[in-house]
Image 1 (cartoon, rainbow, N blue to C red):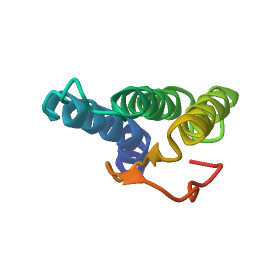
Image 2 (image 1 turned 30 degrees about the vertical axis):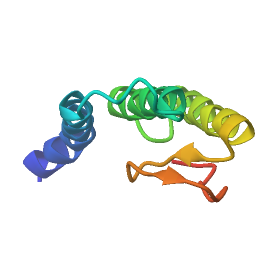
Image 3 (image 1 turned 180 degrees about the horizontal axis):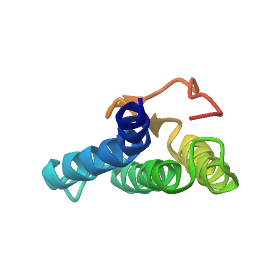
Length: 101
């Protein structure tokens, strides 16, 4: 039972490490990509959410602040580009993100 609890505690950290490796493996984006800045800001904010969840727990104040920043980045991109970069690694043209991670 104790090993199951330890495994469940380690799961967010493992997921965060996987996300870091995923972002490191993504090829360099073309300089003329109109959505590059939005994509980078949202990816960074999403990584911060994952990091805060791994460090402090899913329902911690730190994770909530990181989620608020992620949603603010999405909103900012929506207002500038009429779209946003989703967690599914594609550009969305509908304002369909959830306000909670």
